[in-house]
Length: 235
Image 1: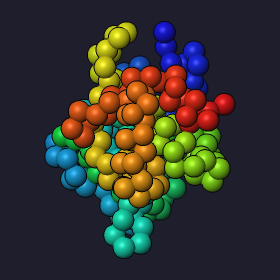
Image 2: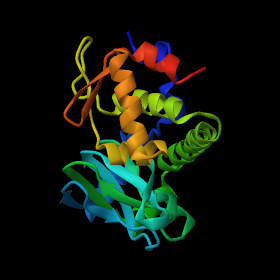
Image 3: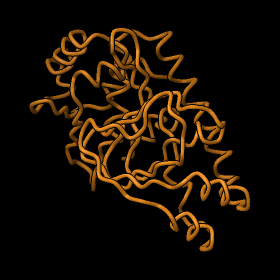
Image 4: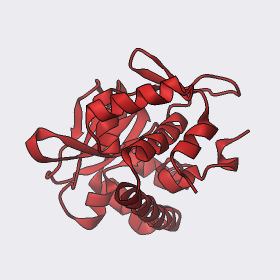
């Protein structure tokens, strides 16, 4: 049974995986012409908040966190991008500096597509421009949902909902009955939820005692996703 039957995951997840798929061959070839590929270790910066974009980034393998720096050197994670997703295109399209930073959450391979190539294809491809417009509209909905979550839900509810979303992101070669390990540090989880690390640890312990999840070192395995949805007070 898919989680989509009882939880609207699309409300919390971007859909940039599909934007480059099945493009006209000539458009895809232009995007590939000057692209470069780079490997990033966990924690390495892909782009920094405040710098000017010189292209966009395609996550070929791994996961990347998009975050803003806050007071006293802390972070607020805005979004976790998965394998197959694009990042960095908002600033490029607006002609502004990056409003956030991006760093690898695990060993990742990222493809860089130069600004000139991307904009040239975008200018002549009705397929790419149409997909991008649809994507940006959907992302606005996701961000509004995230703002509403922070404004109206408790830390406990926010954590429960983020664990549901993360469970979907960490599915690899999934089949029914398979355990999904969320491999995220407590610090990053706290920065994603918008709470103190000690509060996250305490609530995770409560969820563990309830049988909702189990931990394997720093890895988290959701055992009862339906109950987690109830704890998230999700409607």
